Length: 259
Picture 1 (cartoon, rainbow, N blue to C red):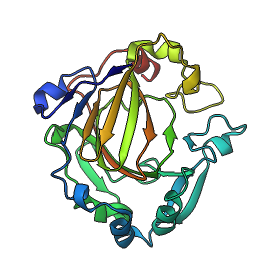
Picture 2 (cartoon, rainbow, N blue to C red; picture 1 turned 120 degrees about the vertical axis):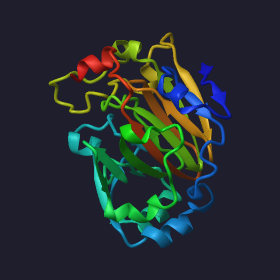
Picture 3 (cartoon, helix red, strand yellow; picture 1 turned 180 degrees about the vertical axis):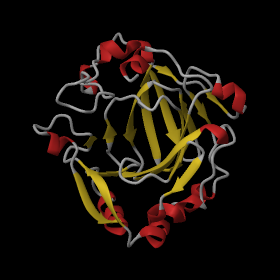
Picture 4 (spheres, rainbow, N blue to C red; picture 1 turned 90 degrees about the horizontal axis):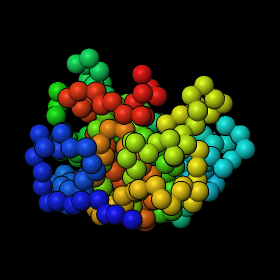
């Protein structure tokens, strides 16, 4: 497995034009969240806020090995404090922007999520993210053992993922291999048409892939339409993603599935 290229820095224009993933070592270390976001600190910020969390008894999210759609996409409500207590010993729960986004920008209008607003003071868009094309900002929180299913982001955006606490590994596949990764069919029973139907152990070994390890303080750039899946390694993992539209829409096989 080939490692993703890693650099200490890259300019905004070069990253915006790039068509392969990149790790920017230490690129998130200047963010206040890098030093602050422990479970104890976050419990003080958001402990009593009630949120929805993804739930999977296997630690795979979504749980596509389950028998029913309700089980595959199960969610549970709890306070953030209870979630933090549970993630200390179990990968069953995962928080993502699917449940509550941090920030959205559509047609020049910026919307901030009031529930998570206290987090925004601790994170700023990396210098490489063009403010005029910013689309969505998400936060992710988890314990050790979470595995996200292989998928591509169907918003057509580039993505920078900041590892603010903990550690994750990521496997990535170029868009041209999407057919061999067998996404759920359009118009089928499963609405997650940007996700592979294959468990990772069933992906053909000859499909080229890249591997990245993110340590706290690192950034990972995922170009638009690249397929990716994460293993959450740290005892407590905190990430923030910034998505932005490329200068021009990218024509590739996954993009043509979502006109």
